[in-house]
Image (cartoon, rainbow, N blue to C red):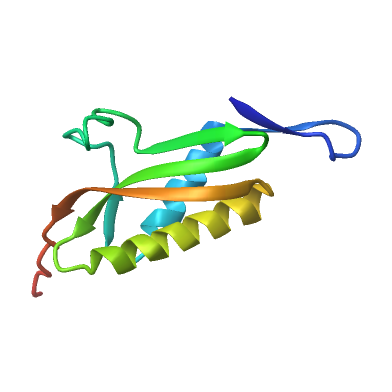
Length: 119
């Protein structure tokens, strides 16, 4: 599904949901504590399994995003997820002028940080 913007002079503008998902993924990766944005390997409440890492739902040019993230062990998960929500919403709205109503974050995994190697 694409979002059309008819306010463009001398033509039209369409933004693919894949582009919105890519922006959301990149914004989530900017947050300290997020290791990756990745599809879940196990179902969450039986709703998601082997699905996309970022789902975009559009209704009347308003987006709802659902991201599945893997966080580093030791990260304060509620704080990390709140930062992800704020950063993703700001990035998508800023870059696309599409209103974001919700950013749902599913923590799909936890991984240990790789140890720094001494040189």
